[in-house]
Length: 380
Ligand code: P1T
Image (cartoon, rainbow, N blue to C red; front, side, top):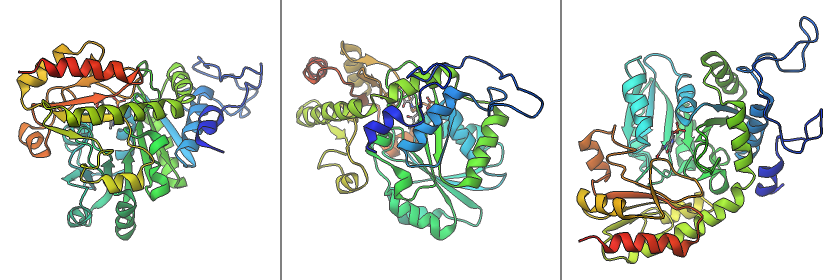
């Protein structure tokens, strides 16, 4: 079955009681049991809910996983994965991740006794050098937020096999439409469903998808025990969003490429970060491990003042955190999404004060470019 067909149908049989073609929002906290010890597979809605279950089955199918679990946010999905580790165990992390991921690791989980090393995971040798006897996990974001650097997933998976580590890939930026890490050897995929999967900027959620049965039981246990579950209504919104994932991603990418080509040519833009450009240092890897380049682009306009002037001048594009919605969003990573990353580290990673990030939406691309053009033309 093709991707678009699965996106529309997987996990969603017509409702058994009414035949409704759309999985209903099962807005209930509990399920009445027929007699003691006998029920229809649902007991209490933190543990299982039919709307959430439909989404979990759908996501498992799209990511080529056997199991999926949905959470109240991308951050709670990431938290569940890291809770599989014990005190003193060590996780190697891409040095450039979403700022909230770094904050969770550095400010919440490190004080609880987990250990982290942040390395440039673009370089497999750097990952290898960071492995120590306590290392249990490699957590990568590819492409990274916001510098758009890639990690070779297949090579990272080989290394993880050699050392017995779990490879976790945050696939939020690409969505399963453009990148399927489990097929490349990753153990666990995590998503902020808030972004491309839902696609309409009206829900916050997260998902964990994986193949190993014992790990799946562990994540399921954590989902139920910690209780940071995705609500029935949010599950329904994401299910609905995913039905158009294939067409949206195709349009996001077409617009993304056009915007990247426009930015590269613009005299006020110093540097563009987009894996679909031949000048991207990992363009060949991008073509190999992704089936498209997506619509996340970062670019440098030279200074904080110019970035501020640009961000205050856009009219169609909205100044906002988040990404992956149908509408184009722009943001200033240094002061917004990555404010929790220490200044020196931000500088080292290239998250400069002049860096602007755009999540290219699916409006008419001429209108997006006209808006960017008028805002860039104002820069002194
Ligand atoms: O916001 P939440 O659903 O909790 O997801 C967190 C998250 C995880 N992983 C990646 C790669 C992300 O980009 C995010 C959230 N990012 C933003 C809000 C942002 O504007 O970059």
